Amino acid sequence: MNTKKTILITGGAGFIGSHVVRLFVNKYPEYVIVNLDKLTYAGNLENLTDIEKAPNYIFEKGDIADSTYIQELFKKYAFDGVIHLAAESHVDRSIVAPMEFVITNVIGTVNLLNASKEAWKNNFEGKRFYHVSTDEVYGSLHDGSFFLETTSYDPQSPYSASKASSDHFVRAYHNTYKLPVVLTNCSNNYGPNQFPEKLLPLFINNICSNKSLPVYGKGENIRDWLFVIDHARAIDTVYHNGKTGETYNIGGHNEWTNIDLIRLLCKQMDEKLGRAAGTSEKLITYVTDRAGHDFRYAIDATKIKNELGWVPSVTFEQGLSLTIDWYLNNKAWMDKITSGAYASYYEQQYIKR
Ligand code: NAD
Ligand code: DAU
Image 1 (tube, rainbow, N blue to C red):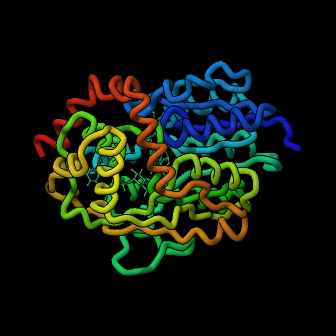
Image 2: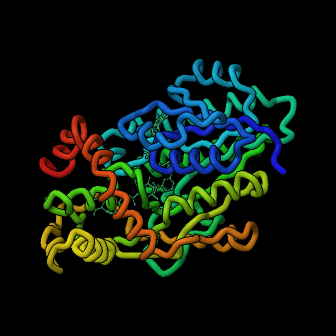
């Protein structure tokens, strides 16, 4: 039986955060879920319209990099737990403008750690600081090996360097102050509500509008794809059952080269849009590679499976089909996002590069 808890979820208006907020609000009516989000270009409250009126849900607009604001927030609510997802999350943007990544991902995380330490200092019983991180902190694989929880950090992009730094701070607060932390490092997520700067929603949107599909380099880079709702389930599992001080890797055992994944996407899109086979593949255009492009990520998720019993619930074919259907059925969501500032981002990233 669960007891009443007040949980702060940061970045809950973003892609993964919105799925985590929904899961917690619906599954735990006895909890109060406070969603703190700055509503950057990536934050979108329309991701949460189905639960926005739930009696156990509160939205707070604010910036995790603002230490005074964060301290006030921790005075306003007696948080029992923090699930920290707020971040600048796109590698290409980190290459163009790294400082935002330092400010939000590093300083923002340390502000949350300080506020938690301060609020909980006399009694850590029943408290938990959960830091959501990425497999990119482990660097780039060039052989057949996998990332383990014990793999040394070797971040290669400004984004992954900022996430690695935040992970180090979280562990340092556990070691130094005994703050009750838990961390997860997850592979590439896909699914509904992902901002169309990331590969799959960008390519789905471009296929719908018959725009070219910009494949970086030769399309040989490898990613390990996990359906976002399975990531949210894993976060629920680790938040409730993970061991304090531990790290758990989360992944789908689902590696694809970019070009094979894109070809599969094109095939499914042609079928769903009623286009002749091969139509969407003709949109594939090889463009200049991403600077410092990590070659391969691959997660070994044995620990979370053996210790906590979490395994993905959908196959990749199911997840990809559900994902495409969601974007095709939510054109208004995509059209709104791709109007305004998105056009200049797209121009900078893909037309002028
Ligand atoms: P996202 O970019 O879709 O969402 C990030 C959210 O954080 C947005 O709602 C944004 O408004 C908010 N935010 C940004 N800066 C903020 C600030 N200073 N203060 C408060 N809110 C702020 O990101 P995502 O893909 O959902 O990723 C969420 C987390 O999961 C990140 O920490 C990311 O590193 C991690 N992660 C992502 C993936 C992936 O494949 N997308 C995989 C593993 C881990
Ligand atoms: O591995 C987890 C990480 O996955 C998360 O921590 C990041 O927040 C998330 O953005 C994602 O990072 P990637 O860089 O792997 O994702 P992205 O969707 O940007 O790119 C996936 C692959 O596709 C990568 O090899 C680059 C390539 N790509 C991407 C874009 C946007 C292209 O070829 N063309 C593109 O236009």
